[in-house]
Length: 246
Image (tube, rainbow, N blue to C red; front, side, top):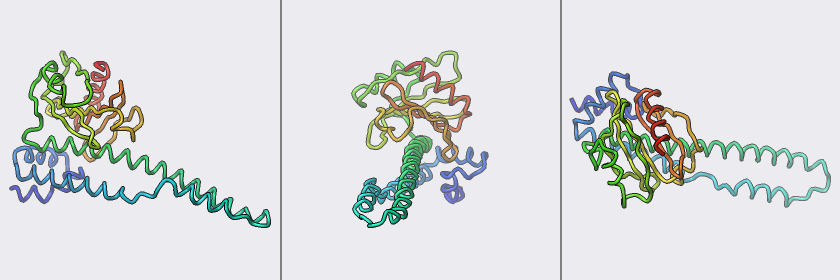
């Protein structure tokens, strides 16, 4: 049975399985140590490939160097400036396009890494290090383990339940990973210093990454991420609870 699922792990991570197969494979991964380890290995390979793809990004000084080279040339006749002017305009437009493309690429990289952390928790047999439904137990556990403090929302009269938390990392920056349940869905909430998500705008709409929605915002010097395959309504409700608590 494990061999059948192993052949589908790549499609699973790309979110290309049907809803029924995704649900069945989620359940299998949580109960099969071999498949869970396989998922983690594939996630690490995915991150390594993303990092390698960014290693040879052209330097930002390239446009300035090209402009200086163009300015150093002094044609004798004014009309000879026209091709250079056109080339300079094209270079500026290309530079602006590259800047926007690079920003979107970095933004997607952060959100993909956050989604990978969520999948790692789904695949792990021990997704949390402190197990408690009491926010007054979970929050103090992080003291001394991460370089900031945060508030957790009151869940009374809501459909959410707190499972626990663990320390995690984004760009080698330590942060908090909290896990909630709502209607059989697991929701990961990540909290980092604001600098860890500096590639993102202050408030990001819900982004689709594979089968998960990722909601991110900045508040009080911290960067928050909420990741889940729950409904957007549930995700937004938990976001509101956290914003009110902060």
